[in-house]
Length: 199
Image 1 (tube, rainbow, N blue to C red):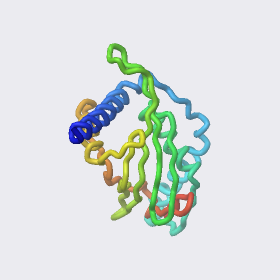
Image 2 (image 1 turned 180 degrees about the vertical axis):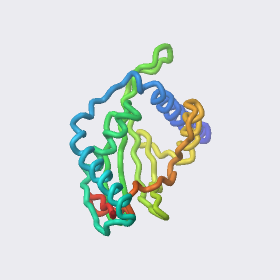
Image 3 (image 1 turned 135 degrees about the horizontal axis):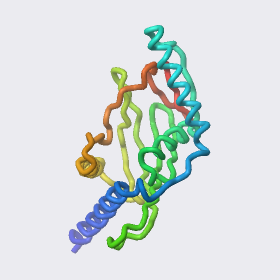
Image 4 (image 1 turned 90 degrees about the vertical axis):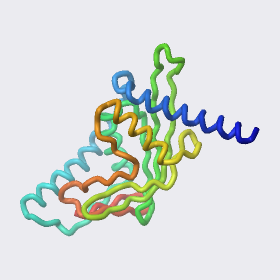
């Protein structure tokens, strides 16, 4: 009986996750969230990255300096980027802790799917992890993932990412994927409530 209950809970959770990822696929054309208020913060970081890249290209070296951005600025930057790529993201919150630790929440606004029985809803995906850099690359090493406050294994999310990528015909970017640091940026660190960018 206990085993059946556990299996039922897992299947219910997995079903919710699959539904969420499926809806995200079609939500881009149905849900639009206005992030115009984030434009100023986005441009602040965008222009900084452009200047750092230009210096690196012209001088062939890093500047040996550190820029500091607060949680509000970094959150607005990524929120604005997500507005272009995944319009169903209603909100994003990021918190920085010392030693590379990051906590965050992503709120998805999901539309009603005709003939599916799925009504319009909102779901929350929370996470915690650590920013890691190596050889001019960066990744977020996830420690925990919570879907609507229920623990989810990163491996399960990666399976869903693979399915979504296959449907879209694109290369999958799994959790923990390494990304090249922006040109002109040599390293990333975090402090209490801030992101430190070495350039």
